[in-house]
Length: 158
Image 1 (cartoon, helix red, strand yellow):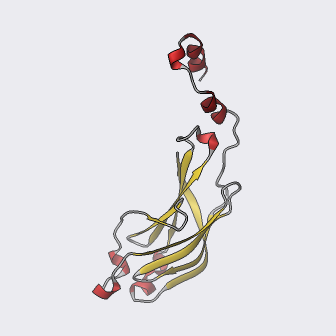
Image 2 (spheres, one colour; image 1 turned 90 degrees about the horizontal axis):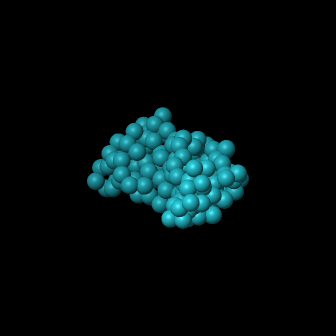
């Protein structure tokens, strides 16, 4: 960084925008120090629905997520879920995917000026919840319901 700053003094073509330097130095970045909360989780052989809550400081967000991924009229079962595209929730900063084997994947986009100037100020956090232990009841046609699930954030990207 110091080398680039010194170069910019002698070569104007290599100058660094002030906002990029200010946004990345001594900036209190937003952190995910608490797991996400999933409430009213319901999974059937043909659909999934839940409320997503992020209670992390400066990142609070609540949204509803739902999707239909199997045609139950064609004899579909939970084991036929294919890995596919993420489904966006009502708040488009949150998306989810129900993976084969009973793993709920969640991604949550956020803005943080400490990551850099736009468009580099966007990050994505990823979390997962394994529902495999309760899948037999769903595969047999019964719903899976949970009042509260805590989803650990497993990865970050910017």
